[in-house]
Length: 129
Image (spheres, rainbow, N blue to C red):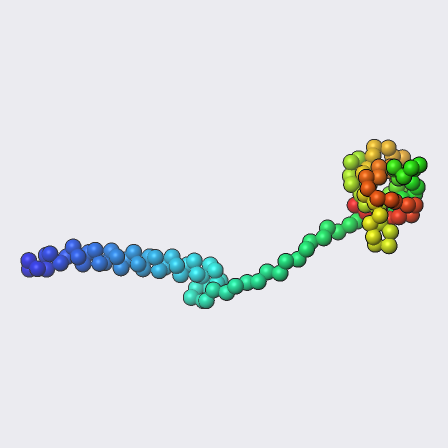
């Protein structure tokens, strides 16, 4: 009986170690399940293709005229199109950008003026937002 009494602490330590090992294994299985999507599966490497997101340009009107020295333009807004003072717009011709414009406060009805920030716009160029 004396020998058994001395072995009990060792058995308790061994049981605690086994319990901790099973908890660790369970945690590893849960992490693996999160990675693979199914418990016990093998991890897979998912390849994500990079796609360049190009913001869609929405037509807002066309250039009706260019001011002297090409410093500003008058834009005729399309029906339902809205622009605010300070908005940056782009002038295009044949799907190529010709100028960058910044909407100024002057407007009359559907006619809006914009300063030319960069480029060389011309009459009838499409204006997009």
